[in-house]
Length: 222
Ligand code: URA
Image: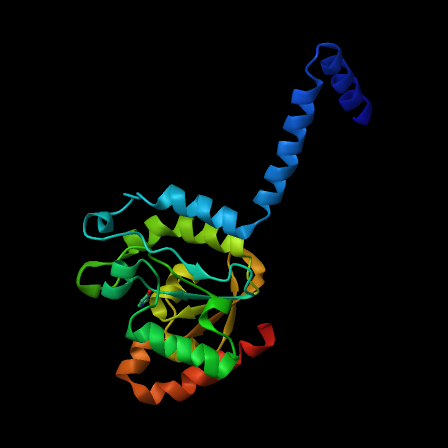
């Protein structure tokens, strides 16, 4: 192989094209470095979905709301879909539920929001904050799967039943399965933890204690 490369370089040099060859092989190395950079891979993914029209949510959304945070975080939180505030600001979990989630991440895990990665199973706001439908979740899934492949977390924390269904592909009652670990169907080395959606806890403050317990199970991954 090496001999073939050297022979090619020599032949190109004879033709006066040696410099071009050298430059292009340097560019290839640079490209490889960029490929390993999760930020670059995520931006590439975001750009390819910015104008997504795979489901009807594109008609009413203001913008596609991509995940955000630290792409090297071993913990990724996955919610349901953007709400009104998220649709306006273009970032996930920035409304009341998001503020509560940020506070719990700090209190229980000792981490700032920017130190973990947060995303949703559905990237566009369903009208009137209804739950995303199965076809909407299915249309978004290839995007989420690719996003998780780039992030390669150690654990995915599903916030609520819709997130759990989107990630595990089956309907699991959160009240029964919360605090339990499952295997991510596309990579069994990645664990999936189920817990309540923060908006549910805002409506049912007594569930805060259980939410805390569930988040405590993430401490081993920090
Ligand atoms: N609820 C979600 O599930 N996701 C958000 O981004 C905001 C609220």
